[in-house]
Image (tube, helix red, strand yellow):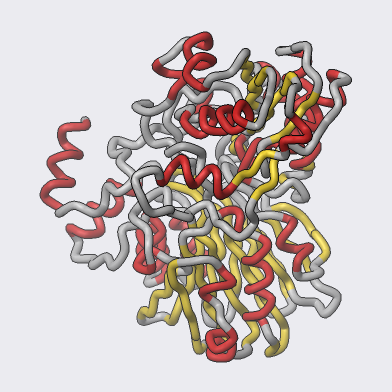
Length: 483
């Protein structure tokens, strides 16, 4: 784990008439590709008949013209792009998950991470449930299915399931006749919906996906809210609203989301520019140019330059044709990967004192390699600034930081980190200034547990990312040891 990886992206389409919903989902997922490059999938609903395709890889590679023709038309569709924070990679854990049961079919796409998935899965397995994946999304699908067997409607089944599942989840659920959007009571991850001029409703993790399909933003799904799209009617179930304090993941604004998105009314671009301005005030330095590490470090670099008065310059060119999951062969794979993905524009930095702004420093290995690239290109000084505070604690809500073991800030002082990455100075965003990014008071409305250890829920007893991949007996033993 050299860098924080993306979470997942969910997308839903609800049209009144049969149309090319698969194409709409395709473009929506394309706009959400930054949230997950491990696998993707689309399920199309044509009057209750589900046709789907999912596989490992990028949206453009998985959904070929032949696949799109196979998906055909329908009046509803659910899509998903995945980076796995629970369970292994590959096709087996690709979403959406499709379930066929006695009361009909259901497709489910999920962004987030449950904190009680181990306990729920163990309970379900001991009752005879058979799992085909190793992700906690399948746990959610089983819980909803069980509730559906006794509930009068799919939306009530989702409502009852929310009493059992704990943690972070933004869901898009499709039945034969309805589309449902649901967000956990803490609102850890974003979810919104919009409408096209033709009257088609679109649900997405970020507003940039609405823009991609020419849908006008309507509103965000509120924490704890269930929104039901049913015929000409849009209904809300609010049983879980106000059940917990809001804790939107602060890293949505620092890194995960696209800068052209608005998350819960806050511009991601503006939040990152604000972070850069705060960095300039907290960690000023005499320098000649400010550069940002693509992509999410660029906005913060602009903010740093504006606040400090130091000119902003384009320091790197990023190879847009290499995804974050690209793996290079050979013994020097990691170092070569950085060189292939990023190339320094030497004219910008040669002989100059450089402020390099990045979104975060996790292990420090990537930062060290980038600093080395700048040195080799002739930088006189390199001052590293992180638009995130130091990572000190694991995240249990969907960010790929499941252990303190490799977090550089846990094991080293600031001076040691500076020397390890080869910088002339280093500066992190102050924890107290996170509220400025969101336009809220300190600690209000967001989760920063990976920085401060203040978890808004109980933490899971089993925390290994691939915790479902062992035998049940082994998992049971590990569970007992962790108590």
